[in-house]
Length: 73
Image (tube, rainbow, N blue to C red; front, side, top):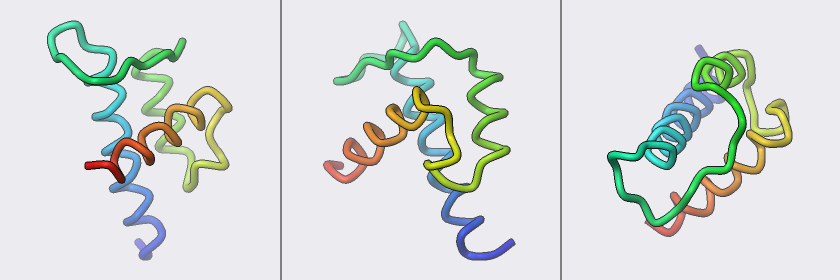
């Protein structure tokens, strides 16, 4: 596993947590996720990709929102 793989893995796991929290009715967040994909589809896409550019357009949009959100933190 090279550095790019490690960085993508960290980003993808953070994105997955961001999406899960945003979709949860039990967790209050300051953002909402508008995504018509199941968690299984999201996970599969994240596992098959190595960069944001390889994601579907909907998931790219959410990934860019996550990037902006995580930089604020």
